[in-house]
Image (cartoon, rainbow, N blue to C red):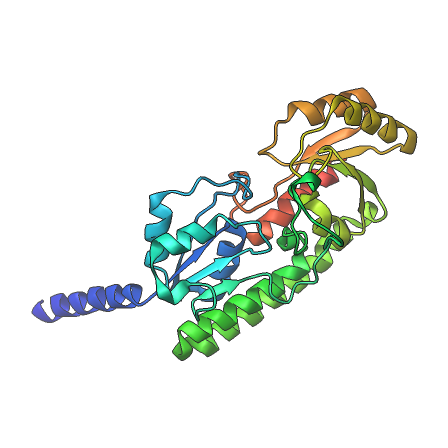
Amino acid sequence: MRFQFLLFLFCVFSVSEMNAKALRVVTTTEDIASIARFIGKDRVEVTALVRGAQDPHYIQVRPSDMIKVSRADLLVIVGLGLDGWILPVIDGARNPGVRIGARGFLDASSGIELLEVPTGKVDRSLGDVHPQGNPHYWLDPSNGKIIAKNIMESLSLVQPSEREFFKENFEEFSKKLDQAIIHWKEELAFFKGKQVITYHTTWSYFLKAFGANARNYVEIRAGVPASPKHLQELISQIKKEKIDLIITEPYFDIRLPEKIAASSQARLRVLAPSVGAFAQIKDYFDLFEYNIQELLRL
């Protein structure tokens, strides 16, 4: 009996020690967090600072965010200015291991083929323009492999002894994603060549991945609400070009796209821009499954 009790204590303490050694990974968004969990599995504890239903452009920094980053072994950001609010968090955390340029800092956009990189002068008169390019790159599922590879390499730098473990998980994730992409493209074959209206430039990578195109936007410029004139011009364009789909995000006011849809006879779909945007979207694969099922209802 004593032996069994000692064995039980040994197992408890062994598990506790293993959990204590798990790398603390902090990400800015749920999408990056989901991929990090696939790569790190039980060797990581992953925390996302932004919930999937929030607009990641505009986040109110909390003291608790700084505490989380202060304890992190690895900080992963989307980059390209989407999560610029992380800079004061990094400063406030006072964790030299995750400062920009440190081994424990990763900009997940590294290696991404960027869309909509502006040319010429960029200033606030153009709206919420990202000078380095459109930051919503995770919505092209093929970019998920690039994000995963970046995370694998950074985890391996922080914890070299687990390099092979992270590499195996990356290969498993990549294989699963490759198979899913084939299936998703088959399901959305009808979507190829489709012209749509989107609220914001969120969907550029998604549309390109599945062969569709955004003809215009509800916003008059990125981050700038539609004027009455723009609204009327948009409705006229939809009717003239026989555009039958408007896509918006759950964190924008639904009333304006609903009004446009009602006036133009186009259909409106509220798609999920991130993991966790809706309760049933638990991981990166669920994100595409949800959006594709919504589009299949057209």
